[in-house]
Length: 271
Image 1 (cartoon, helix red, strand yellow):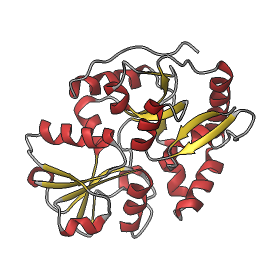
Image 2 (cartoon, one colour; image 1 turned 90 degrees about the horizontal axis):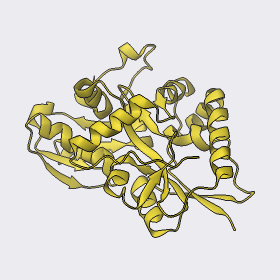
Image 3 (cartoon, helix red, strand yellow; image 1 turned 30 degrees about the vertical axis):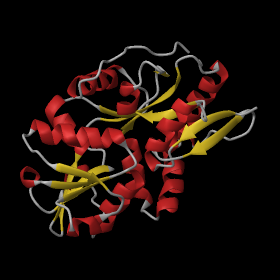
Image 4 (spheres, helix red, strand yellow; image 1 turned 180 degrees about the vertical axis):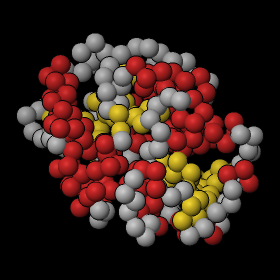
């Protein structure tokens, strides 16, 4: 019987499982974060990448691995609010339906700046700017949309534009960093609290991550081809992430739990 891993098919998670082959007791079930969250609670996946906000909401039922994360310090490039009006004038915001964490982060950031916006979940892309002040996109859709606005690929991170053709791009991870000087943790690997992960599965995950990070160009090449993006852009995007849930990341997760009024349970599997 296979041990089922819940996996979001996003480029930024690929280094964690690119070199993990299905078989030998492991199978994948792909979905967007909101689906994976629910599948883990239901028990239709055994171990899954889950969004950090969902984990904090359900910490009484879930427990994460101690050394895995999808986190970022500064700009993330793929959790973006696209808008024409200035940040301070936003009133109606179309929200991604793929991730509760990014939505909650956006609400926190706007509220902290004293902005009372109306939020409406609606799938789509930049065409929504015809009816909304802003649209929140995440993951592959966000970075593909961002790239679609660029006329050239910047040679330096200091040359990445935040306004293109009248469209402003607000990177939520960067805004979080500017407020807290901490990383933002978007996701963790977690299981249900009464089902500890098999040590062999964790060992294979760690080995796959080591291979993924040690061969990031290969991972970037595969993901760039899948999304029809330049390989150089994809490689820069991936090397920007933090995948080990180190002390700064845990501090960032703790700060987010305080920001959204949820307890922070420092409770990890010992594996």
